[in-house]
Length: 385
Image 1: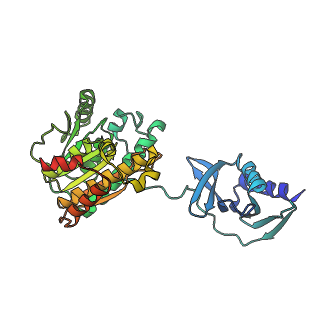
Image 2: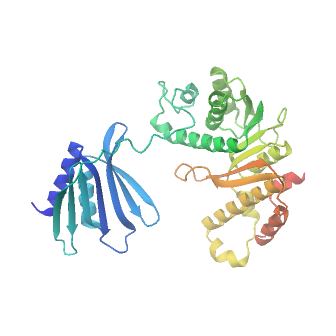
Image 3: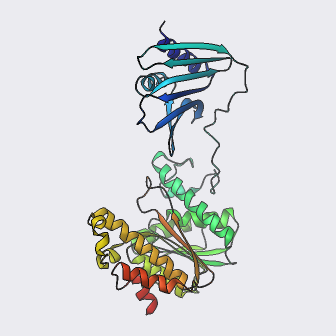
């Protein structure tokens, strides 16, 4: 048997018998390829054994998983088009395949000392802030089924929920909520994140909070209030109205506004600042006001003549000014990625906690506005009222 088919037969046997410890592919066929090498091992994903292959690039790694039936053909393809060398390690043997530039292949074998088998679990089970127990409100929201298990179509939203709770968890470790904190979520929509945060704070962390979701669409408010009452979320309520007109009863300790469109984010920020909120969390959506108003310098026109780059520059400028305006009001700010762009293209989050005023903020705001020919920022106007 020729070397390559013989090697692939050994791979198939090791996969079938469950004796594969690892497989590596190396020596890229082309100098221009981004791949450096590949590492594969058996893993268990949702109860099914698969070959998990990690492609090593110069600046990143990429993992792909293959069924045991499909894996040999994929390895054959890689050996044909991408790599010259391959090493297969089983529990007792190593098979070394070397292919030269003329296509001639050599297969060698040697015995090895048996090693402890690697665990098949697909890495470690990720510890999520919302522990794995039935949460009836997720069923009411269409994320989980009647058995409490997360539905396939709800997996993405469930990951987003847990990422959000994880970020809030870290924020509250640095800046704990006051007792009986009043939390307002402006632009709460269908309530996914509002319900999850209330559940986490009250049922997981045993905190006493009063939470209000503000939403413009009355049908969503009615539906969310029904879910809250049905599941005995006694200190969670939803209010119908827009952000600008909403007047909080009793103040705000923590203000949240996720994906409030365009200047609605500024309306929410102004509400939080005026109410003296200790914590502010926003994930802005749309940046139309600044994009329409700014007049970038001529030096930037070769770049900003492209619509997509102009849009991104407007986003950077808008959110950068928001962070500086918060600092000018005595907040410490952070700006970071909320969740990957595979979940939502609007993925920037700004957090602010009460601290000390940044004495340079006013000067930096003025300089940025001058540089980009911007006469006004909506949040600045609201704070000046």
